[in-house]
Amino acid sequence: MMSDAVKFYRSLLEDEQVPVAYPIRDIVEKFYPSYLDLHSVSDVQHKTANCIANCKTGGFGYNVSYCEECGHRKIHACACNNRNCPNCQTPLEKKWVMARNSELIEGIAYYHLIFTVPHELNDLMFQNQKLLYGLLFQCASDTILTLCKDPAYMGATPGIISVLHTWGQQLNLHPHLHTMVSGGGLSPTGQFRETKHKGFMIPVEVLGKMFRGKYMAALKRLHDTNKLSYRNGCEPLRNRYSWKEFVHQMYEKPWLPFVKETFNGNGNALEYLARYAYRTAISNSRIQTVDDTNVSFRYTDYADKNQKKAKTVAGTEFLRLFLQHVLPKGFNRVRFSGFLTNSQKTKKLKLIHRLRNTIYKGNPVKELNTADLMMLLFQRDICHCSKCNGTLIHLPRGVPLTALQF
Image: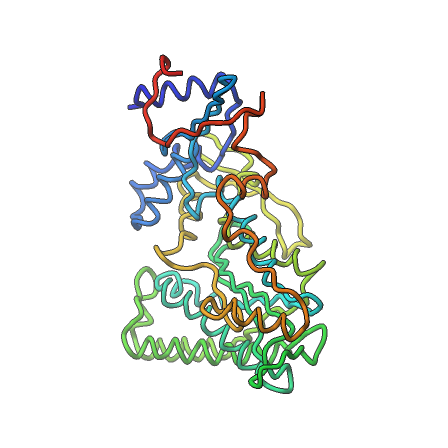
């Protein structure tokens, strides 16, 4: 039941602001009980559903502030801050983009690489997410670093940002990796070198063959050491003959990464990556209608000249599609390698700027408090009253207040 405190806060909210519509929250509230009757869920999926259902409803408390001079009050229902919730990722996304912009090297090209795997691997990857999604990061990074160290291409170690993306436009399972690779790096002798092939960096055929070799070799090692799970449709792969045939089939398929010099500047490429780093499988804006049984959402059909289309599915099926993209607890969707490896990032960046006679400015948002961050990202002053510019007093979340105290 709704507590008296929550009822009180909501009555104040209704007086001073129009509620924001969050279709994804309505879908979870309406269909999740029925979904639980049909499907089993992991702990992290259950937590995600509960977070979305309570996000900005008061279920996580309220942020309350009032002006000590004119008495004007502000009340905001707290966000859940779950990384799979599409309602509350914008501040984190903007902060991430500003931090990554400080790591760009001016005057060099950057490349956008996409690593995909044959769709026949999808079910096995879903049953072994931590192992095989992690393997995707490892093999893609190893492939790029190995080829970039070759003097024929760069002869240096570049900086790499990798972001895992598991969904297609129709919420289907489609694991692939977006990477942003610097067109220059540090040589073994400590010099900064740029790529020798402007426009394409490394031929896709070379990238694809090496990536396939590294991934399949590691996959076979996991199979041989009995570290893979073969549940839910993957059971036939327990048979050694079926496994050999499956491996042979994977080697026969072309694994062709997509390579392109970053579009419209490096900053735009970072914003493109940020959409995958801090957004989830679908945004509220793509959900068109939610009725008692179905959900309709928009998608882009890339196979049909990028036509905008709509898809309607049962509410429980929508939740199945959505929740399959919830990653295991503690799994990092964004990873850094090359000279951007976390343990060496600052040291390497300072060296590169010194070699190029430029100034290293560092992360502009690292030391900012909440008030400064809100001003920088959204030009919102949370310290002063919007009515009289007086000082705002912020009350700790969870402190019970009554109408009399207000």
